[in-house]
Amino acid sequence: MARTKEITRRRSDSLVTWTRFHLPVEREWPTWAVDHENVHFGPLDDVTGVRKGWLGRMVEDPEQAAYIIEWEDLEHLKQFRSSPACAAFLQNLPENDHSLQLSRDGSSSEQSSSSVEDASSSSSPASRFLTLRESTQRPKSDVEGRVTFNAFLVPHKQGHETTWNAYHALRDELCSFQPRGFEFIAGTGLHWECYMNTWFFALEEDQWVHNKFGKSEQTDESTDGRTVICEFHLWPQEYGATPEHEEVSASDPEATASWNEAVAKVMPPVTAWVQERWDVLPLPYYEPPYEPTEEELEHHRKLEEFIKYHRENPKPEVRWCGTRF
Image 1 (tube, rainbow, N blue to C red):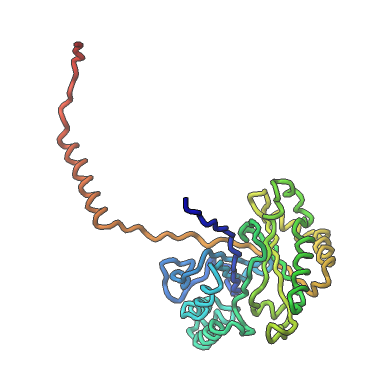
Image 2 (cartoon, helix red, strand yellow):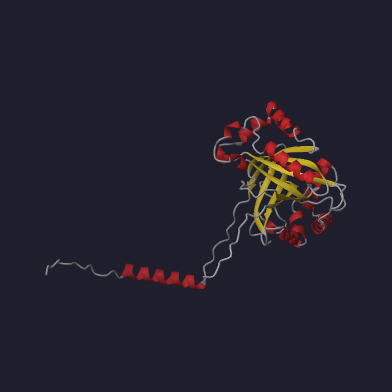
């Protein structure tokens, strides 16, 4: 008997990009300069490598939105970044209200030019893509619903020892951390804490990171630099959490103090920390209208004729006398 080679299947790490943009509160979804059949994905509709999409709004500033994409792999993302679809995508996601007004006035040539530059240069300090790689192979929940987003700045030494030490210290401290108002979720299932937070490393920083932490001075892989570690603390509805629970916790000074105390235990090596609150919704699933083939249409026509004929020409009723032999 031939021996069968065993293949170990591993769940691939998620690769996610966040593109922040200005979205007025009266608009539920972004709009595109060119009509697309799939209105929610717009220029991404025909892009290969896109797994899922979400739209996020910051709770404290609802006009601050984020278009979130999960990719098959880094290669597909790179191909998209160098394509015209990327320029169209960024052009219709203005960074601020001023950019939105320029787009409305038709003066978008300068913005389009800068979008192409961003799309073709992965090292641009004004990158529109915060690129995140999942840091663990463990099962996880999607980042959806009400989310507490934490970004931690960590010195990056050669060999990554500082980064990994900081990451494990953060996970040990925050993996099962329960801010005040979150305690009722504990004990709802085996390893429940694995589904309450998700961890990512930033592969590429965006302008938001530069605004919060300053621009990185690292010039190449051999020099000391920094790493941004991101944790998404989830408030999942399937465990009974609601936005109201999170709002009560966020407004509680003792809950804020508990976050500060937990993070203080890992400072250093963490040198800076930013926290935001987000509502994240999955982009609606789109299924194009079904168009039957000619063969299916012909089959349906014949079936209709068959039914019509037998309705108009019913067979005479047959009665059995039940003769015994």
